[in-house]
Length: 257
Length: 325
Image (cartoon, rainbow over all chains, first blue to last red; front, side):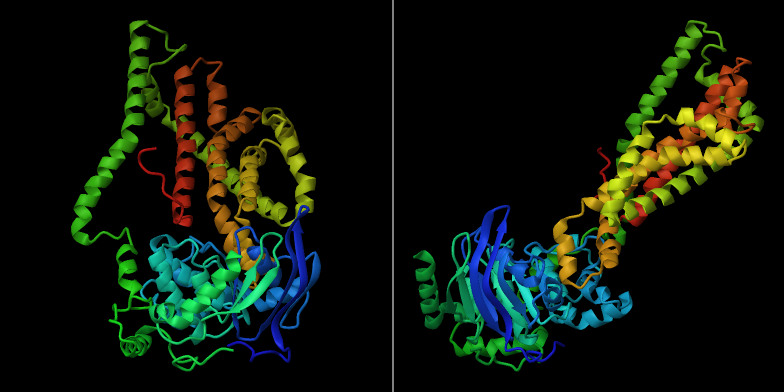
């Protein structure tokens, strides 16, 4: 689906000394981060630490005040926008579209007709456990299903880089755990370069191979830890494994200090 | 850095295949499989969600109960205003009869109803003329109003330039403009259409602009990361999101349209309900004037009803106002 890792560029995402302030208040200051193709990176940090701002800068929705951002070699906001798809914190499904049409909107945005966009989206729609809900309106879906439609919509944009902004933040803990397991599967099935913002250490470790820890505002990267995204097995097996527990202890030690 | 996963990427990671794949893993580690607890799509979290998912499609055997409920809610909805209207009409009738108020001052409702029937030869054609003015004028206002709202929304420069003029134009009373328009456009239907359109135009434009502007900026950001052009954002997000607000404007305008037509007819015409009222005044045919008012009200209410019906058809996702409000 996507261009094979790289277009010649070594890194999917590179941030060098990125700073961003809003009306004089610094949200990010001196962020350095370098992410290889097809890697999965979590960004964790305190609330108000500029995590969402960082995603929007990468996505090309915001330009940094200082520093440079490369996404697949592109530096301008417009070019970055062409390489990134952002999954917002709220599902933001359009109430006037059915579940399938919501998932297919990025395909329609590329100028494909509605019927053809539906046809192209449908295989993944079924694979993501949404079969039978094609014509349901978002209001008829549960929170977990809405989030899955939202992820599929982001995926259907067919971008190299997926930016997920606390995708499960608004869900109850049981649905959240289910969807974490589900997202691991989905990301294995359709591998992309993924940046996941979360405030949940366990979620970060579980879903990603690396975890960048952001400081208090103004945010910068304190350290990059190893995650458990490469471990095999079900969510429950991983979470209770000694490897995971020790990774979690390391992470909590860094965050707590 | 990434270690290989249990299946090569590209092979199905969901559905039955995935389910079969996870089970051996669970058993190998010695844990009891909690039957798809861990969110493999199509297994664990599916049924729980499916149960709460689709709503609002009652099976056929519940249709009778549903229609009875609809009747009850209709009574609750229309009962109070109907009763109040009947009570007011009854009181009016009573006062006129008991106080022996002469007909040319205040005719009783029964007298108005009788005249409505008796004068139908005059009132019927007049109703058609006015109805035509109202409908065409309203349609012009709706098209121009929504069109201008979209245009001003797309161009902030144009909005800054035009918006103050738009508000300024509303400070000129239509009733003053009406005779000028008659001088300019003659005694035909044209000045009436312009007046109806002018009076309807403003609430449509203002609501249109407000609706288009008040779209959640996060939705627009989301669309931008999904390759949406300006046109795609307008068509797929802003316009549908603004529709409920646009329809509020249309409903307000619908109630103004009949007033506009009467202003137009008063300023110079030889037909229509407004003309019938003017002609009846020197003859003290008060009851006929009231009959014309009844018909004008009916026109306004009918247009309001049609707009509300169109809103139900075109904005089916909007939360329905319940029968209680």
